[in-house]
Image 1: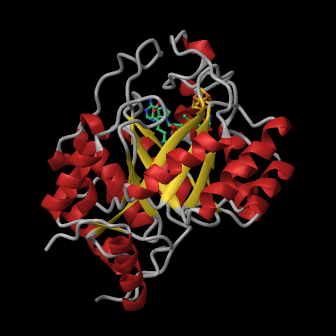
Image 2: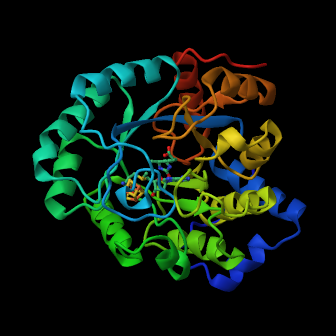
Length: 346
Ligand code: SAM
Ligand code: DTB
Ligand code: SF4
């Protein structure tokens, strides 16, 4: 295997643009080569999402079914009970998920909710799963409480480029997002940060979004790349569909600029062919959300994903594989996958 290229945080816009616009075959080859320097290319990590508080959100994110300002018909629910979360997490573990992500439709959590959130984290960790939460903006005391409860990852997306951001959200700024990400990182938790493509942005916005993540002081450990799911009644319900090749280019750019991060082929898989998903894995995506629902939107059924994994010879990545590709880690990851009861294809 070739020596891995050094991890860089000083990528320039010109470099990112050049990579993104390479002839497609050259781009895919480079992305796959970088991918192999850090990860087993035949392993994909499975995360499961649960909406722990749905709808009625005060923010105005133009893509979101849960914003009270969007006129979407979704009714607001309360924070769900800890026991319900743990029952769902047990099911997710039995289905092979190694990371459990809990999402709330909040601008930021209220202090009165913190004790329940801590209990959810502790309970899911006791099941042996990695924990992730996405709750909106956090202040310092909330970051410390979540960390001390054992939260592994915090998801907070920059969503798009700084330039396009105000077309999509006006109730909080790009800088607010970066502040929360810095707080999470400084407190020692792992950062999950990505965005959405297909929101009517220009190509340069897709490039700048990935560049913004790749030039953070430390790369996010996890980079979800969502294809917009156009939700009824939202301002983006009728936005023009993005060329899927542009989506694959965005994944490849993320993989090349952030070689050790998990790049997640996130929302939008229900509308993707098996072949498009396979191309995304080839471009360096190595994580997915499993289960038939994301937060409010559809996702492929688990047996459909398993059929795809079997056809592609993909096995499930275990807990703790972080891109430090070595023979030992590769073995650990494979053993964990087998422990998950997954079918290992020949
Ligand atoms: N309320 C919290 C927040 O916004 O920070 C957490 C939940 S929020 C739903 C998490 C992320 O899901 C968003 O930042 C966005 O990137 C993604 N998302 C939401 N709706 C989406 C859609 N319709 N299509 C694709 N991605 C979406
Ligand atoms: C992320 O980047 N994508 C997930 C997760 N982080 C929280 C959410 C996708 C939501 C898709 C729309 C929905 O289910 O409402
Ligand atoms: Fe609220 Fe998050 Fe949806 Fe924005 S993305 S409206 S903050 S739930």
